[in-house]
Amino acid sequence: MSVNRGKGLDLRAVSKAFDGRPALQAIDLAARPGEIVGVTGPSGAGKTTIARIVAGVEQADTGEVRLNDRAIDDLSPQVRDVALMFESYALYPHLTVRENLLFPLKSPRCNGRSGEGDARAQELLELVEMSSLGTRYPSELSGGQRQRVALCRTLIQDPSVYLLDEPISHLDAKLRNKLRGEIRRRLLAKAVPTVWFTPDAMEALAVSDRVAILIGGVLQQVGVPAAIYAAPANTSVARLVGDPPMNLLRGRLSRQNGALWFKHPGLSVPLTAHVRQLVEGANVDEIVLGVRPAQVAFAPRNDAGAVVYAIEPFGKYSIMTVQLGDDRFRIKTTQATDCRTGARVELSLNSEHLVAFHPTSGRALT
Image (cartoon, rainbow, N blue to C red; front, side, top):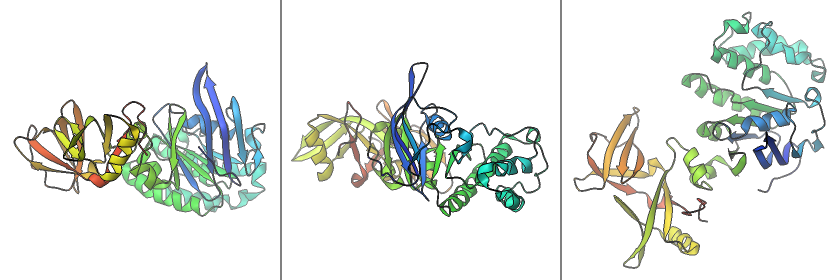
């Protein structure tokens, strides 16, 4: 993948293995000043390994890490000017909440900025709704509170790059929603890059200017959130991104009256001219068809092939899961869902939002 070089953070062909098992494979990734890059992927994808290599806690086997056009691979963690929020929080147990926040400002690289720390610490504690807990010790806090302290200890710094490893993963939904926007606003106001690591792909889309999808130590796709969501590079990305993620159905291709159709048990879909062109260029007789759950409508019909498996109401919308042959298919809908389990429904897919994937490689047909 091509990467724009220049000021900011650059990872160039960074690889790492543990006990002979690849953890990262030739990672090329850049974050420019004032940019938030979200790195998302399932557990074990290599997200934390990237953070630790940039911070100097781990050393890459091959490749190079550059910060503001300077190689930092041989620098100790203390002089890299990197603010890392550890997934494990790494709070000092003998220091109070406030003392934990102020501790990084005592570093020589802060150039005497500790004098303004008290006011900044109080502001950050108010942001995370812990303004009255500054005198407590980590052992007196819940897991979510400790995570908020670790976040504040990172944000109080003025480094050359921020690395946030799952910064809000253990917070309640209401606070997560609040902090996503607040943290993004603060970080964008600073002229330094940020890399935000999270297993929640939708969180990455919400907070990032660009998103990098990491699976099995390999970068699968890097792009702006809208492009990642609308056009996943392969079926692995499609399964990761979305709430719920994209439906994927494997089916055969059939020509009828000059049109090309996708055929699956319980579902037949005519392909648009654009998708048809992609499919014909791939020279395949089967494809994996992808469609977002919100791009599907349904109607009760006794002889339809889709059978209602479950319905989950969420207030303003519902998630309906239907059985299509051996596959489960999800619909995100604001339609009235008075269908019962076992009822049959006819599905209608928005043909303008279909994505076709190669049946063997899983790559999107482009």
